[in-house]
Image (cartoon, rainbow, N blue to C red; front, side, top):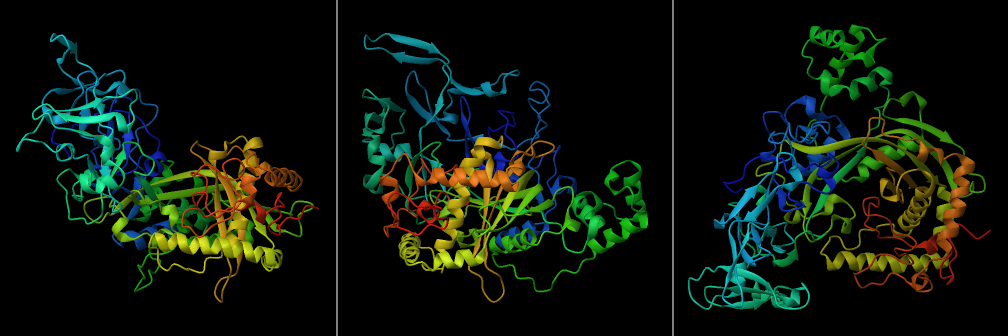
Length: 638
């Protein structure tokens, strides 16, 4: 981290954005500057202690998965240090609480004189506004431009902008663009100054030149991209600027020039878990789980009684002190299995437990954060849908375990498949905590009939279509070096459920009061084996960050007759696409590029924040009859 970095508040983000958009290692584009979110080593401050149990999020199932990925030293999941939204900008302008960032890229450009230099060049000054934190910026003091007539013109102190280009590699490294090495100085030892000039009618790369005032060397920026970049760019230095600019390591990966703010510069490795009340705990046990971050601090029975007297444990009214303390002791003394397997666990393990709860709803396990209400299948769909469960209360916890650059984790079937070499670290050393966020919402769980799925999978035209998608799946993994290439993924089963999910997301967003980007999916798909039953279902849920976390609009759409109407409309919309016949004629090809059949932005694709597989494995011909009739649909026209 640069020595000149001081803690100043420059903007606001929500807790969820710290995981999905502006997490560790990501570049935040602010109105007048850009910064990179620093590693977990820099997050602690006097107002916020990540080791405190008061900042912890209790979700044992998720914590177990996180430990399998990052190591057993991870003690807890922690709320990000986000200041209260009610604080005015003036009072906490210089307050240290918050997620720390450092300026990045370090190289900036003056729009008046075109000077290209790092922030510590000596001519740039930080300007802050105590009443407008978003007005924080760097200015070029005494900017002077020599006009064609030879007269010098002083532009005062214009605001500088970050340089447009950086270099990255697939191993998660990021660094400033190597301007001096790229320009290829004609005089040994020349160090500029440099200028980034626009010599055409547009600001595209072909019209950009970097020029040195010292030796008059110049080079077009277009050579920093494509095959020409292999000869133009120096090797990767292995920099992780979020861990400090002095942190470098050897790296053999090829560097790639990328625009600041590119969507593939940062991909979060997040794991989500639904909070499920443990079996056979009853109401008291569920309350213990919900309030464990407070009860774990009660070292003695008297301390716990003190918590009750000051009103911290009002939820336990109706239970005696002896009963509560006995439950606390049982929770604290729960045996930890010896020789625990700390190999990377698959998220599918979480889904198996959730599937069991949704397919066997038990009213005794309902609590403040988990409430299920089963209803009958929608009229007319009894042959295809086994069960519908209205999830009236839902708590979702997500944790950040790292990030990747260039390659998306959506290319992998599970986060456990992401190579360690491509995982960028969250801290300099093994983290003892990771940032997490919890939200409460509602949802609808739909279980398809297994006999109907099996009957559909046995149809000849379905088998032909599934073989095409499976061949594309294998080639996709082969080109990316994901082993094994053939992981025996049930592509047809998954594509059926996934396509139904997207069709309903687009339909529900019309009436439920939530936008399509606010509805998320959780696909349950497995062929079954000797130890686990087959799964074919989907949970569509929304998680809002308000105090209640639910508006009731999505659950209302799960009532039998209402859901039947929405299924009718969703399937009818799916039959035709604005891009037909091109869309309906599209099939998955073994070229390693696409992993979908008849699907596009006009009919099936949704926001990538809603989709768990990056809009892959979709095919509306699996759902309904399209104009091509190339597959047997799961839902016939009649």
